[in-house]
Length: 224
Image 1: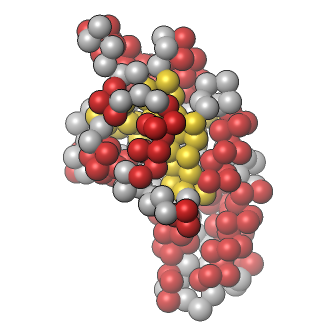
Image 2: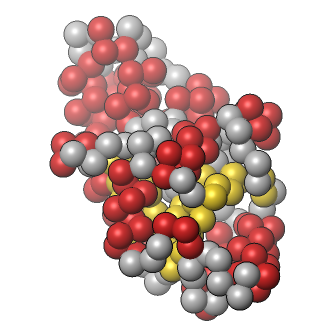
């Protein structure tokens, strides 16, 4: 068996979080008197963690004297309001169920703050995923595309890295898999287009969760 485990990105891969992210950013921007952002803008800004999201959404980024306050306010607000409009993409739950039935171990690695990752995982995926790792740089775990959180997930899953597939929807995920020396599956239902993913170096692209499930399980059969 080739892939004993699959490590998933969260936003744009398992969950469509775009509306809640947009609403959270705009709530805080308006609170501090700044112009709000469109959903299309927020879609471009996500992928590198919430600090980068606020850096891009707030005028003048970290040079803005309100940056620390806005970032803190967003972190607090979004953790409490991260599941108002969020939900799994179509086909995600059947995919996870099928992979689990076939003995594939499953994990989440995200640049979203750790508290929100664990809250969303417990709501939607507690029956399938026991390892969920969010951004935790204060503890010395660098966020993606550094491989630190992926290595932590592999250790928790107790499988060799060579048996793991990494799945994500962005250029950050492609680079993360490369840095961790893992095979990468890039999904087309998330926050980046086919052309953006190809430009980032993606070589395995999937249109829907059924295609991805088939790939994982066929690869499994072929490598027994």
